[in-house]
Image (tube, rainbow, N blue to C red; front, top):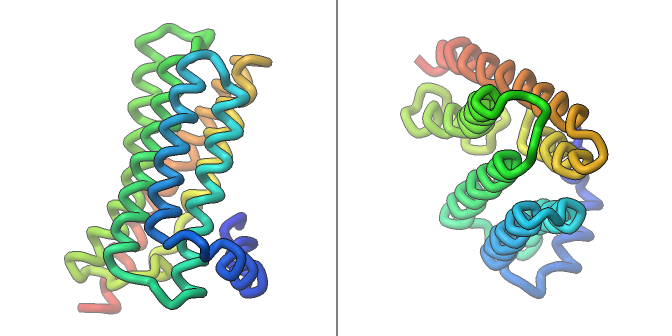
Length: 201
């Protein structure tokens, strides 16, 4: 998985050491601000600029945790802020699609995008809620393994935005691929909560 590459100890130490000039929470906030700029770039027809900014935003999101661990400043508040900002950025990514023209009826596209938004936001909520309610204690999100963690679907969505000016149909198929992947992840997450909860009762 893509996430495993960025979690390699040497990579984590390198990033943490060289990007500690900003606090982890600052990096998280910067990632949100850049994502907002990326969204408006796409709205105004500058897809490539939007893609570049979304990539930078994603990289900033990867940096915050590395800096927190390297400087030993990890906190529950920081984890909360990081997860909250991730959901805002996910929403902005999907909201971009509402401003792009696709070769399908508008109402059909709106339903697809609603389903995409719902299935994208639900898996982290399932894990967090299972942890919060004590059904499956999983503060590091390692117990409830998922088909798609954030980095996987973000790659799908950013690629769909970037390819839209070249081929809207390929962009549309990528959205469908993302929807299938995230729907499977929702089912998988719920299933694993029921299975894993038996270990804690």
